[in-house]
Image (cartoon, rainbow, N blue to C red; front, side):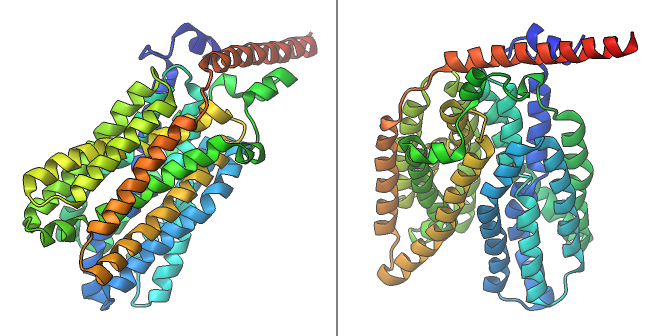
Length: 439
């Protein structure tokens, strides 16, 4: 049975639909990418590098910021590449580059210049290994169950953040940090790259549109998307969420300590927040398939705003846990909503480019937020005012989401059917041409 026939035979809600196998592969790919292997694990290398090379923590932290800014700058350009070429091949190649560059950290020397150059290369190669590329693959496979599929993929980095740090810390203690770097590099090199290349193909319905009607329904170009209000409303929500989320979470432990919460309890709150965020992504992804995205974006941002406000003003461990539950559930929305709403409003024509632009907005706000929080504390001696401002901005952005227009899933489903029919016609024409040549 051909792959196009299999796609027709099994609906998306069936576990036998081949797209779900692609989802699992994409989730593993996200775990093997830069979001987990570098950004999540980076904190565990701070003390070993400080002890061996004598670097200050500020010097080491600059490497993290350098890689993050590089990813933010490169994301729209990587999106253009992913829109023009088959994503799995691009992602697999970037996985190999990322793994090789990450492995080179095992030969670090006391030169901070080398560290920062490596961070730039990690950002360049890692841009193709996070949710940006995998979301495009999954979005091309799903229509009715798009939200659930995307939630599984974007939860990959959260799951990696929950389970990988203790294992990596054990490796550092037993084998040393240099050997641990090589062990971590094996994930993108020998797991992420081959799995993506072999088991994350595009569906047969992802062929180029065969008529002007299909081309129009396939989606608008990124320039046309930037002319409308929908993209900018979504960018506003993403920036506001990123300011509050990254600003508060980076300063969460000292903020709770200042209010009398013990350091061990503060660490529990941080872990609980991460777990609630994963749960929020999975829950929102499931709900997105049944309700309008604009209303869910509003609800998620409002819940996050309330939770982050309460978390920023919590004075007891119990209050912090309850606030982190609300904040985590709301915070889990951004990586679900970005790819989901991009496809619903703008189609697949410039999907990765627009997603990359949104991620750049998210990452830029996320890089600025901790600096603003630190500056506010240094000036006022308290986080209360800046937390209130960030939370209020998130709530206002949530209300602005109500201005998003309704999208039509019927047109998208009709497009999928038309593209599948076009694919069959193209393949049939190729088969007839082959038969003619043989005859």
